Image 1 (tube, rainbow, N blue to C red):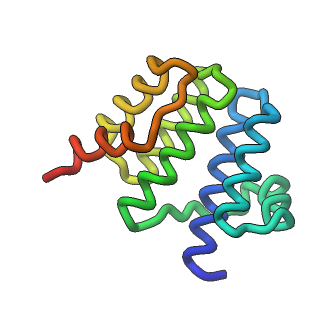
Image 2: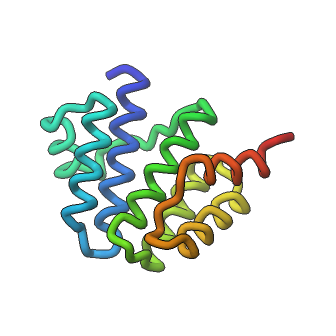
Length: 137
């Protein structure tokens, strides 16, 4: 498996774990993950394997900052897609951001923004602004 495909599999695994962290995997979350898999070029067969054996997936974040921002944006979108943000989802997103080597201050600001935003949906431009503030130097 090439590195780029491994990054995609790892990201989908993170999305699946997030969708399950609150014990309520909604249809909206499932549809969102399926849509992300389609856009990333990951087959439904591979996605089903991830859903079944997600503990076997090696965490592989991208090295490119733009790709990290895109992935984290999808994580934040999934967290708010059911319009309910639980403490466990916020903790998961914080821990995942740290594993991705994102700055904790930026992660906290994004999570606060997600909670405060109506419907909990944040545009990619808003997330980019936050990251730019913390990474401009």
